[in-house]
Image (tube, rainbow, N blue to C red):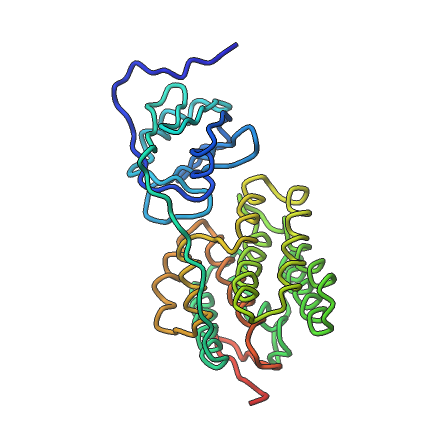
Length: 331
């Protein structure tokens, strides 16, 4: 039975900006279904597997379609689970809702990092972000054991407490394995260790997924700029794209796909620029915005960015002493 997407209302809802996924859907009109209606987002999935996240606010991301106010659309769709949609180049049509016009909506164009600062300055920037993550005080996600995560990456601090819960311990163990493999230039094994994190943890995007997204995006940026071996980044990208569809949910799989292109939420991209250039003064503002995304998503992404930045720093040994403090021990 065909669905009538016409509406008797003369009202329309205007979109403000399209992320890369929504821009692709606009360019290649499709149909699909309503995937989820959450408190702060509406997810649509096209028949060919692409996902649009309708949100309000000012944060752009790989899947976002930003509107001025999500409330009217959410109030209509919350009672229509399993609904459908149709996308044309002019608008997004959902039965029962007003058309969401997007023909003239600008695209968000992610800006990848373009420069690399001295190792000592990048280290200070990573220190600053690690301290901010610790100071958040969240009891979930990667924040409670950021010291152990970073300690896993370099021959690190003395007297570190080992996480007592199974999830945290497993994440730290996987990073130990990835570190050891990279030191041996065994890039296949390092990829295997990192993708083992995918799907770990609760939530719409599990902590393991967000951590991996931050790490791989940072590696992709640095591989482009010659900071890390290209085969390291490409091997992990290949492994993530092979494993994610079988290990995590479809929304997180799409976000990981974009992370492999070096595309994250806008404040995470801005943090990447600051970390790789070593601009300490540019860390706090985007970090605060990133931390506001999800319950733990933004913080876990930031933790991944710190780890990815450390992987590219030229020192062979970095000591982490807690509260965001690092020591370069070979210079």
